Amino acid sequence: MEAPPTEPAPSPRVPPAPVEGHCDPAFRAVEAAFRENFAIRNEIGGALCVIVDGRPVVDLWGGHRDEARAPFPGSADTSSTPTPSARA
Image 1: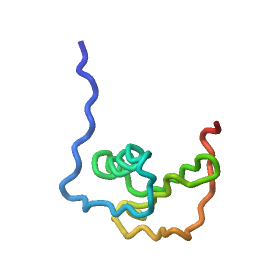
Image 2: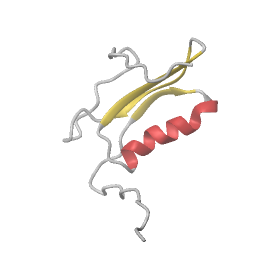
Image 3: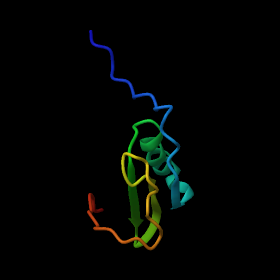
Image 4: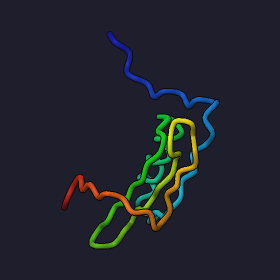
């Protein structure tokens, strides 16, 4: 029988990824998963916004701009292309 897949170990050479923004306390698991993408899965950079009933409950951005770990230029005012993935 095959062993279940395991998460890759974080690289000790990769500096911690900065994460900024805000998250409603009811969505802390979403923030934890977002941070985990950088700490465990070695994600480079990203942003996430979740809107519920017209109100942003998660608005996070962070990581790095490239594999060389240049600072992510994002801020609360950085625009991006919206890509809706689900609608209730």
